[in-house]
Image 1: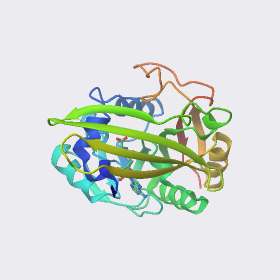
Image 2 (image 1 turned 90 degrees about the vertical axis):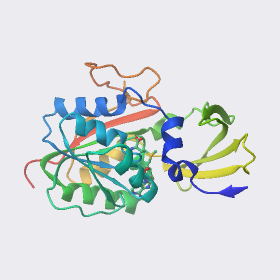
Image 3 (image 1 turned 90 degrees about the horizontal axis):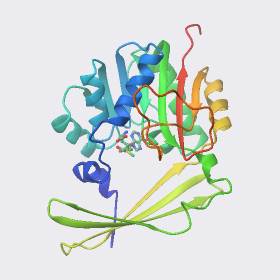
Image 4 (image 1 turned 60 degrees about the vertical axis):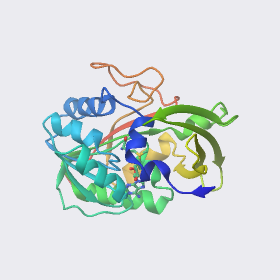
Length: 263
Ligand SMILES: C[S@@+](CC[C@H](N)C(=O)[O-])C[C@H]1O[C@@H](n2cnc3c(N)ncnc32)[C@H](O)[C@@H]1O
């Protein structure tokens, strides 16, 4: 059995495993940007395969996609052209001062900030990169969901799909590391093509809504929206024109925060 990040190393497989043919994540993001009057320059941090960055580009934005994975960036440049794609670490980056009107961080990318120092580095970098009045839009798991609920932890989730003639079976186990305040995931991939199984390890910060508010306030951000949906990855999907919710009980969190106009 080998170890590695199979999906990050195989961006095409990532898109096949997590299809978003209707570009719901990008449409939800564009809706947030429009409702709050964001300017055109957008940074998609943890842009992955580039599909959201390209959809925002198609919506008329001037988009930069940034990711740590060279494999993702190479895929994005080839398959989702339009945006500029750059290598950057969301724990601390410098892509120019006041260079963006909005920073978007989708599908829990923000939660790759595991430690408080990494969260501070991320928010300080975002603040520097955003023009006054600029927006931070993020969509991620909700740490508070796991308080008193074990439905996502009780048993492994098995998923099967076929891609390019090969049948893939993934077995995913989630566990809570209370000391590190992380949600840890082990995913074992097996295929019917004779390759050995691959084990993928990931972890996300278990971030609670009020904790996130305190971090944002410490970096001078004003929270405009923080709610559990509807959103692009909630059980009941967000639909065009729907208003943001008011609770933070569900398994996804949606954030819109603003760098104030005054320092
Ligand atoms: C779950 S994917 C989300 C991709 C994309 N935002 C989407 O919604 O489809 C997370 C992405 O974050 C990237 N990533 C992980 N750690 C990172 C870091 N420290 N800095 C920048 N990107 C990172 C991964 O390479 C991966 O492409």
